[in-house]
Length: 108
Image (cartoon, rainbow, N blue to C red; front, side):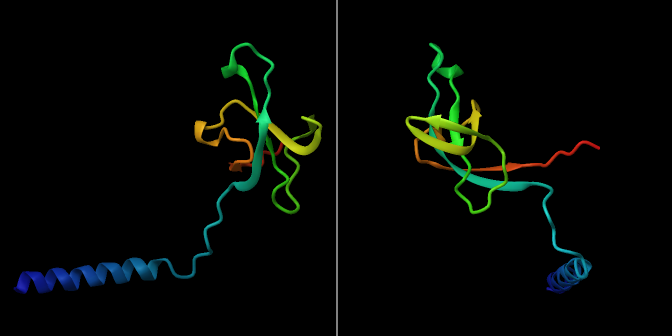
């Protein structure tokens, strides 16, 4: 019984020390940004479909950063479009919402 009480008191002391050690630290800010868009279609330029690109329009959020080009696709003009081959199978649906994380790399 005495060992259980000592173990319980020791656990409380360790938790208290760990919790107090995180005070006065600034909140964590990840070193990446996130952008949301939607799948608008697939380029069908190759006989091998695995070599085709999927097109994602990143104008979903207000004031999105410029990450892509303007593109005329199926009679519609899209801005901020990226082409990707690495789209997950579950996201290869026209109209599907897509979110990606990216890092800003600057020269210097």
